[in-house]
Length: 312
Image (cartoon, rainbow, N blue to C red; front, side):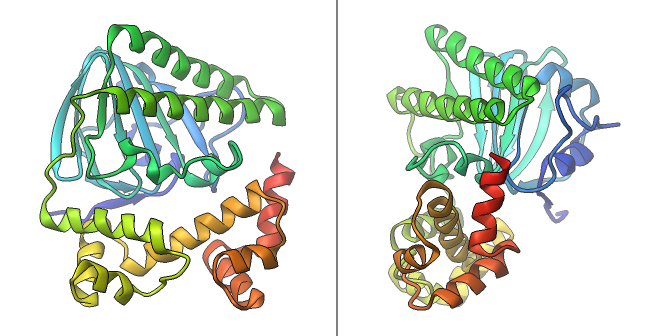
């Protein structure tokens, strides 16, 4: 089996999936290849240049696709799904994925965004991995009723329109707010749908889901892979090998990533000092926290905060 390709940003997405990809689908600006990006584009613009038979990928960002006409067949995790009109499907970050087929008449919207972009939306919002449709043990799709399909599609259309119109910082803030509204509305619909049930995961993928759930609960106090291996009744070596095999990254990456994401959230969404945030995250030494943050982001906590607010 060919090794999955890591797709880090919109430009890599276009290079992997599209023939002769455009620099941007919008008149406003170019594709952002760094952190804090979001792109939304009509499927009918994507479909004509889609490559066929591409290798499986792990996207380092989140994906939502709503189909208003036509059909698609996608492999997400361990299962291949067929989706038709009136369906929205989700591809969580770092989940094995491949596009098997899009019909020639497919229409709708394809939206990708990373965690950093989402952090800029609102203060004290739910973490992305807590949305049920971005959890690998849940069904990765939502079947829209006739009454819900129209407003959801309109939200995607509005997100696309505002993203392409943006010229000022306030315009970009409006785009982020639309993204947040869309996610909240989709969560409501997803939870309301009675037939949504947890899918039966293979043993290894279930272990990954359990591991990530434990991290979200204990990351401030437990930082070692052995801590989580003990709670899951497996050896640290087995846990690390399984996580790496299923996600392409070691177990320690997800523990550190959760700490970094929370640090970023507090830097962006609160006015607490770096020292206060360091204590919140159970670092006894602020200088060590700053070194840890820089090692994983390339910036100091203060530099990261300044960059965010300069962007805004």
